[in-house]
Image 1 (tube, helix red, strand yellow):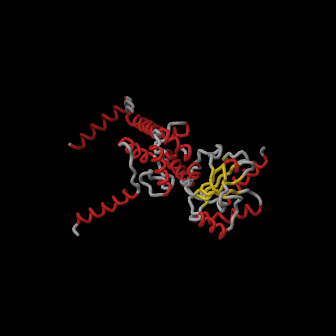
Image 2 (cartoon, rainbow over the protein chains, first blue to last red):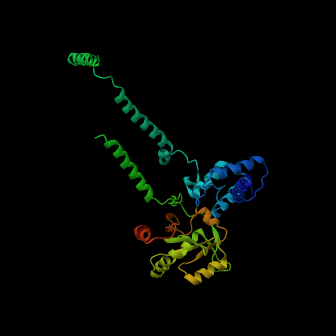
Image 3 (tube, rainbow over the protein chains, first blue to last red):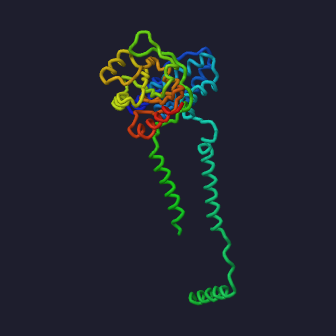
Length: 155
Length: 175
């Protein structure tokens, strides 16, 4: 087997995994199909916590996929399906949690860090670009004499 | 003096990491705390026609323990449940989750049955309504059928002593 064929084979193995995670479902309209796919991407599996419902092979994920499917076929809208999941598993089930007091740090934490970082940079930068103190008359004379003596030595 | 800021930042970072290490990533706070049990009517395990409903779980404080014969961790906590039932310290109702009827009965015969009654939730519908994601799970239910606490995973001696028993005692005193 040459190298490119080997690579192709390895990629094909990954594809198998992706297909297996999703039992085939049929919908009445392409829009419903799209809703199903989007919801499965936005809902998190509670067993494999870093996988969405569409990625996860856990049995719970299959049950929840079935539930989403049943609710779409029932004519429920996306908000109703999300509410159903949140009522049972909490905000954790949403990859994009709602903005409320307990999630403020999550939503605005990065902004807070940015502001802090900018403040630190500003403080250090100001310290560095401060104008040097003007020389006193005494210092000026010393500079002059130093320059002269230096020039004198080089001659 | 010039080391104070980096050192301070480092200590803060270590503190956050230390807190993070102490957290259990599998623990997800349940939105069902202080909510009434979801409505259900399901068969009772080990009977032909008897059914258990939401109303059957009111009247006194109880533990509702979610288990299955395929669940390995359930074996770990089972002796603790048997002890609780035997000593009369807690009334426990079982919720047999996504199991086969005969397997479940055989399991109870082999390991002992600490349950007053067991709800047979073959398809996991009540499990879904209870937000079950990691069997075993245990709910503390008060006399009005309201969920007061949820333990995810096996009941540990620590959780039993520091949370579950004090709560059951307090609920037993409540009217």
